[in-house]
Image 1 (cartoon, rainbow, N blue to C red):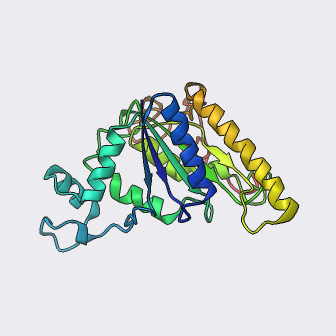
Image 2 (image 1 turned 30 degrees about the vertical axis):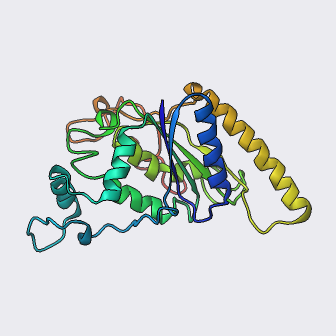
Image 3 (image 1 turned 180 degrees about the horizontal axis):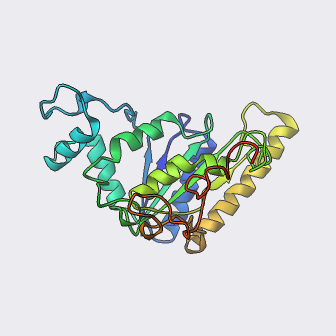
Length: 260
């Protein structure tokens, strides 16, 4: 098995980075080939822009999707993008390690998706969702948050963390990945001392052991269900008899509205 681990945390000694190294070691012990990428360590440029496309098609306005497809077809995408695409296509399992910042992933990771998930290369009108280019590959999000598990629960003050991870989960599914249920670690905080620091370290040590144990048995990891093409009408709306898997693709517009 080929495993690709992408880490998005600016501190090289962070818990996210440590957990990523644990994952790499765990898979290597099982005989897997592991590639690890730290986006901050590589100083990855997350901002898409016209400067990356020297062989422009001559249009007055910069059209990112048009230029991505054009440069993909002409094998003239930036070297860093081509390298990451190569790593993605040559891995069976993708792990994304990142902190939960402002109710989402760090900007560098979103920018990585903006630049690397190129139109024409990793998706097009006929290669999306369950028919995506990454069909048959799996992806797992490992995400830390400073707030408590209660605060990040479905009825918590900070909102349902699992639901707020829909954007990266759906983006990966959009290009064909089978998504495993994310591994969430709550209460990862800095600035602690004394008994508070000691208690947190004990908790984190337990999470590391649990994470390692689950990776060893990753074939048993729960998979996130998604609607398939046959669940939708020709106009891409959900058929009445189709199942619902999340509040983001649903039958009733009022089911998830405030106060419902």
